[in-house]
Structure formats: C-alpha cells, structure tokens
Length: 152
Image (cartoon, rainbow, N blue to C red):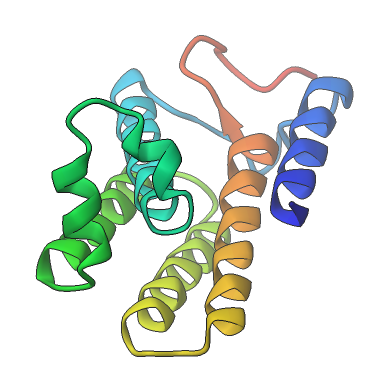
C-alpha cells in the first residue's frame, strides 16, 4: 500500500506542479522508447502480480502457464524478470545517467533478493525501492513522445 501511495503522490506531483518534468534533467522519449519502457513496466508488473496477487492474474484467460513459469522460480522465471527489466532500462536509456544507474541497481537488487532466498521483508523493501525509483524517473524526468519539450 505504501508503494501505491508514493507512486500516486509522484503522479499527482507531475500533474499539479508546473515545473515537472525537471527541464534541466528531463529527456524526451521517442515513441519506440516509450513502447519499450511501457512493455518492460507491464512485464515487471505481471511478474510481481503473478507472485503476490496470483488470483488477479489468473483471471486473465490463458495466464496459467505464465503464472506457473514465474512462480516456479526457475530459469523461465528469471527470463520473465530479466527481459522486462532490460526493456525498461532500454526504453529509459537516454534519461539522467545517475537515475538510470539507480534504477539498474534497484532492479538488480530485486532480482538478487528474489532468487537467492533472501527473507521476504528484505525483498519487499527492494521492490519498494525499485518501484519508487521507476515512478520518480517516469513522473519527474520523462518527457513523453507527444510532448516536444518540458513545459517552462
């Protein structure tokens, strides 16, 4: 719930604060970059939801094999995590280098804590950090393809 609250606050900030995205740090995404980032984000949400909210994902017709692969915690599960992570990072590759490095580190930490048997609270903290970092980049730095430059 706290992750959802922070993401909502960042979204509201983007909508209500005219200085966002931060003009000095912002970078415009191309349509392809936007599609890559959106696909990666969707894949990461699918992965997380399959693990923690399985009944919601199971309501999607044909999702049972995907849920099974993700929850098996084997090679297929790793692929279902790594590919969306790389898509997200590729889509955001022209964003601020420090923000992108933080996101890469957060996604790596999520992967490591997910697959090496780390205690669940530690893993959930890394998920929180990755979620906040992703939302901060998307709402504070990204200029969408339909907007030519950050507003003054």
